[in-house]
Amino acid sequence: MKLLQQSMDPNQKRAKAVDRVDSVDTGVASFDSTRMCPFPDEVLERVLSLIDSHKDRSSVSLVCKDWYNAERWSRRHVFIGNCYSVSPEIVAARFPRIRSVTLKGKPRFSDFNLVPEYWGADVHPWLSVFATAYPFLEELRLKRMAVSDESLEFLATNFQGFKALSLLSCDGFSTDGLKAIATHCKNLTELDIHENGMDDLGGHWLNCFPESLTTLQVLNFASLNSEVSFESLEKLISRNKSLRVLKVNRNISLDQLQKLLLQAPQLSELGTGTFMQELISCPITDLKTTFSNCKNLVTISGLWDATSLYLPVIYPACVNLTFLNLSYATLRSGELSNLLQHCKSLRRLWLLDTVGDKGLEAVGAHCPLLEELRVFPADPFDQEVFLGVTESGFVSVSEGCPKLRYVLYFCRQMTNAAVATIARNCPDFTHFRLCIMNPGQPDYLTKQPMDEAFGSIVKTCPNLQRLAVSGQLTDRTFEYIGKYSKKLETLSVAFAGSSDLGMEYVLGGCPKLRKLEIRDCPFGNGALLSGLTKYESMRSLWMSACNVTMNGCKVLAKERPRLNVEVMKDEGGDGSEAHKVYVYRTVAGPRRDAPPFVLTL
Image 1 (cartoon, rainbow, N blue to C red):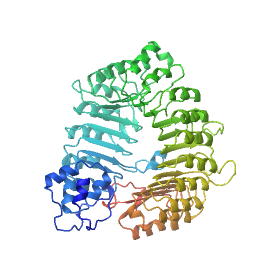
Image 2: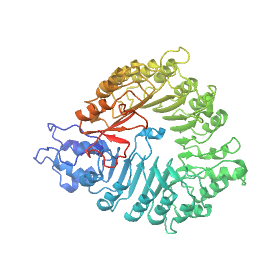
Image 3: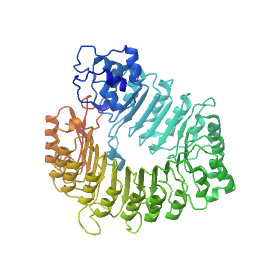
Image 4: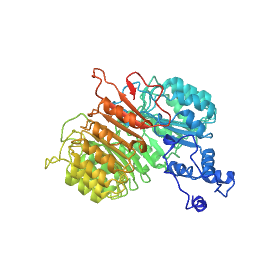
């Protein structure tokens, strides 16, 4: 990159860099026709191929026509943050040599069932174009896309060199689609199936891998429910000596896991099966010895049904762990404390709130290097206040983990003073997502709104990029956010605010805002239209159960024709309200696959 900077004309006027391909047009900008690049094309393409950052590559492409073309021909991976922000035809014309694609579909609030079924985001039109434009495609990573078995079979049979498939939070397919991938992808290196809304028709797909397959490096089927043939799994693991990541489902016992680890001691990431004691027949010492031989492990997850009796078998493998995912393990505080004493290098930790505040005290005591903490509710619908975690545990973590950067914290009570203390202890937060599960709940001690809590975060943490707010909040919270959050990119809001002014503060004061997600707030047309000058620089806006009307959406669509303004109709509505609104920038125009309940204005 230094070489590139030295060759740039410091007086050359550069357009504002666009981020990733979801805002890139196919036409070349009005570049100065003077050739300013002293390098041969082949040299420049080689240099640019060493740049991995999407943002840096987008900036490079805006320097001049030579650099635009060199970046175009040297790019091998493309990230598309919204599958409707650009068409597959535009992508193929812009980048002719792509081998790896990451594609995201539905809005994030689809994770909370707020996006209607059959909304869209079908991957098949993309595959149809890619089959012609990129027959050499090797990797496809999909998130929140609609994927059918037919699409998976098409993928498996039309891309002869295909190697890696990752499906996260996708839906529409079944294990029959996995059969096609296992059968036809002869050089597969990665099959990562995680948290999808799929039909699990049985574990027979695992039997379809050819005997000749020896290239597998990543295999994750932890979220599938059906039993698989352990004999087939063991044979598959034994012949794939380069396997780095193995995450099995709950049906794999500790006995079976031990046999797999004996075949693959080289693993760096392991997702275990069940730890139920009645499914274990070998001595505990044998299990400990097997885990102690896994010298490269840096990530462990799974641990279903783990108890204090068998949890110690993983202790010998914990010395080098940097990521421990216990989001499926209903551990108590004592069990967690004993485990963490062996995890001195931990950087990332995911937990269930069954550990309680005492468990979080153990986190603060034993994890001084921790950078990311996520605490999930074991039962989000349980209203018993005495269960779960509170502000006390959060403060304990902040006192012992000063390097904390990322937090997702579900709780049922919080105070302004506690959050202010947390902010002082951890001023380097880049991601702060506090989810008080009782909507509109104030500081439970003072009964005041939680405004000062989030005010403390945005004032004290200048590098904040992602923020999720909750609890009883007035417009003051959003005034703080607009005034102090100059690096904020993503804001999620639910059951908060007093008036349109709150949203106006955010849209007028956060220069780097890219995604705004709002549900069940009192913001109306005035708030929506206050972002007229902002939305074209953002990726998307989601508003549901707010006070927006169809007329307000029509005004936005008329004033900003380069935006897609979509309204999802609710059954029984009077037609004047816009109950769910999705606004996003696009270079592809209105989408052609909108179902009848989606109106594009």
